[in-house]
Length: 118
Length: 107
Image (cartoon, rainbow over all chains, first blue to last red):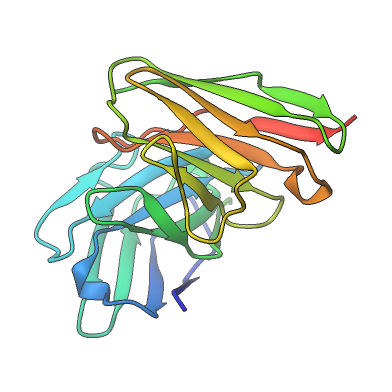
């Protein structure tokens, strides 16, 4: 059974940093691209970042480019999102999502809440 | 960036109703369109991919159609567990944009 469990969220002040993790199991993690998607309270879904199966290729939404860094450890089946220079509009639930080969997001984690507030 | 729109933004329906939601892309995305269902406090759940393919384990009352820029999601007979928000997403070109969502609630 595919499972993904995010962690690392919490309350942080503007300008602060956090590292989110997504621990995956039930599939060959190193064979699939992974993504982060966020959802601000009461709002819709926003794609944030993607990383290739090897980790050599990454993409970011313009809203987070230069502040967020996606990475992965295929030996541990863990996806990361380093988020720096946090702003109040980064407040959201952050989901990790597995991408089927050249395809859609087939499995999602349950999400971790990041709250940016002074 | 490819902009995704959905209509309606919300709808009220009764158990047993047939419901159709439309999604439009601002440029041709071929068949690279997915539909997700999300209930409050939960992660999105994949329903449809490649515009019309049913995700494994999803009941056949859900169906999708379309290509290019215009797509639809149909629920053939609405059941209590189907009241949720539905999102479309294009995965043709980064950034992989989502539609704003359609909330389906009980009439």
